[in-house]
Amino acid sequence: MLPVDLRQFECFIAVAEEGNVSRAAARLHMTQPPLTRRIARLERSVGVSLFMRTPSGVELTEAGAVLLDRAHRIMQLTEYAIDRARLADAGQAGSLVVGYFGSPMFDAVPRLLRGFLKTRPTVSLVLERAPKNVQADAIRDGRMHLGFSRQYRSEPGLVVRRVASEPLYLALPEGHPLLKAGEAELADLREQQLVLFPTGPRPSFADAVTQLCAQAGFSAPVVREAGDVLTALGYVASAGFCSVVPRSATRVTLPGVGFVPLSDTPPEGLSCLYRADNVPALVRAFLDHVSATSSEPETTAESGPRVSI
Image (spheres, rainbow, N blue to C red):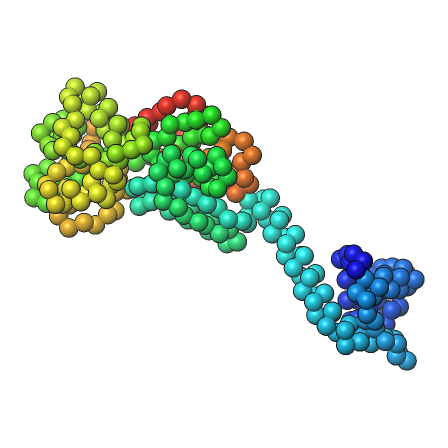
């Protein structure tokens, strides 16, 4: 079968709809002879007659009627594909695969993504819970576009960008005296049984809390390490331990757990991770959205270990 191009379909549709070659030629802004040749080439490619002559012009054969329906679909699909490609190039379409881990999903990440997707109804969002090392591998391999977490070990080829900050809180068991006080200070941790999270990969939020305690002149009184924030809060509710958490974790309602702000600690940073080169248009658009809507100063890093607190 000879190849068929879209221009032949365009000519075929015009002749079929006009029922007259002269009117179809005028509609296509071309003369009649080249239009007739295009229809003849299409018929040779298909291997059947598509039109039959009538006193007033032409009519579709049965085969032509079948082809007309499909030709319309092909043209519509082609237009749709072109539009989607242009939207994707502008960061307005496609699939955005986002990795996350822990408490960022309780507040900051949904807020950032919701604002971004609000003006991009044709973008499909895929969320994947993944530790930082898994995020890094997936982003490097192109299986994931963005990652979110609180501390990253920056690596060549990947960029860490801080996108938000949150104050720290102390999660306390029901009835704890500090809940009545309404706030706590870092020194109050000296007398507590502390649960840190996560257990890995390092550096982690647990390292940040340990470093804060060391800077205040004491060793963190750690009795447990939990895999994630929900497990840490489970220890608070069940065993009466305490845990330092970002503010987003206070959105978790767990019986027997209350929260007070740690008034003398710096805010905890939330960062996103993405490729340093060949950055997808959707990722570029998201970063532009963050720059336009966030009060967080833009800071990035591409190499070396980092713990941000």
